[in-house]
Length: 430
Image (tube, rainbow, N blue to C red; front, side, top):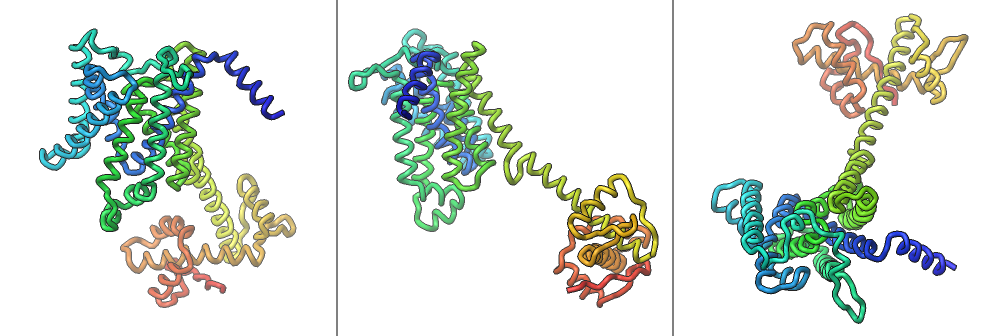
């Protein structure tokens, strides 16, 4: 039954989308997976700009390979692009170490020069090169299904076969060097001290980047392949903290971006590569919003929780001071809401239309007032401020002083019982 449903779904997909669109989408998914895997390692090692450089600088190697008779998407093109990528890396290191340039400036000089050289080669070569500058920049994903190669009697798109081969090679390379990649990514100096061939690991990674970049040329071109390299990995890094989780999540984001971007481009008759990059950008924005630790939503919730805690503690302190001075506290409004919440938490109780502190609430309130008055006393001793200027800074810090800090202040002040205003400093109940 399950197989029948699956077969029906696949049949419906191909009837609706069509085999040509299906191959284009499959190629985009495989290409984006290649870029996401190596891109995650680039992002973790803070080498994203070098990935940008490689994605542009492989162009002259690609053009030279085609001029020498290599088939676009073939082994010769991959080899030429890899040589160009390694030339970019060597040029960047040379300019950084021997020409006195900053590393980012050396990357910019190297990749712009090589990319411009590639564009000039395309322009000068004319009809001898089956490459269009527009396709180099934006890709020709929609035409991928028309360039096929026979594989065991099946006519498969050449770009799909090439991308799938590169994906298998990248997965195998990352699997074989995974421990080295982790060690090198997070502590290069320690990896060198442990005898790990850091240079070889980095070189292997950059070769993988160049291979993924060349496969991405057909799908999204030299410009937007940077989005596939960086954006899924950057989004995954915001959501998870383990590298292998980030790799899997980046691949998922990349695949969703490829499928969603292509379908949206088909729906609105626009550039597939551009729409895929836009979808990836939206995914990153969502990751920024929902990131569990430092996302916008998490920070907003943390801020609201902090403000609510301050209101609660200020309310408890004001009720304690009211009891101390035997005064009445105004009720109603937001204070009434806080009072009802404190009643639910067992820190207040209502007696004859008046809220009074429970033993638990009084203990909490005394800690807050104690922190406030200890800090006022410490400021009065060490800071040249008028007495009436001590309250505002103490009102803020009272919410952040822990037991250890209070103990240190108390020891330094010599167990003083009175603050600068002449008020009693409550003792800490244990």
